[in-house]
Image (cartoon, rainbow, N blue to C red; front, side, top):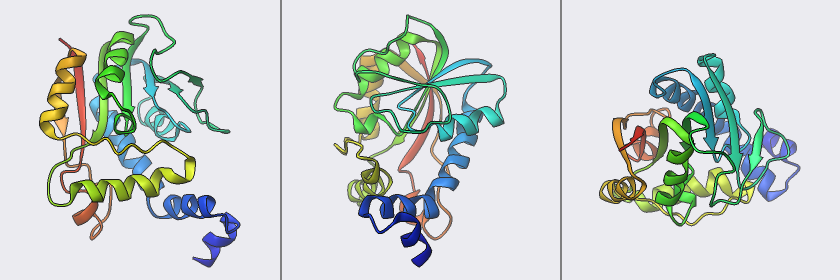
Length: 212
């Protein structure tokens, strides 16, 4: 812990980021990149919506060199591992069907209208959307997800509305956005035991969505 404090310079946000990076971030990037690599069904150009620093997208391209990924985000990080375009959170600054796929990883629960973001992603992605997000299902799911969200994002000043959806609410959002899931995985193994017993469960999913 002393080493982490030294690297963070005792700044509270830097300390939070250092703890998260040390305990969670590297494994999360590796696992999610693998899940995305399995879920994207073909080669092509990919738009990562809410790409952050591009770590997951860069890891995805290492696993899938047939994919070219660029990012878009409402807040640009000082350093990114992929090209990232800023957008207003409403309209993606790209023409219709200008990408083969879109990926959206742990982004929609930071928005007030997940269906609207999905609609925009479906507009620019010809073949499909790979979505990773949370399920508000099970014992103390809400408090558990809020804790994970706070630890992972507070240090980056990310907006935290904690807008988690139940399985039924996701289906309604998909219907509004005009997309349908064609495959889904809920056993992601983001955390090692014993932490997985609390933080994995069925709180996460990766789904491939196509336009209806």
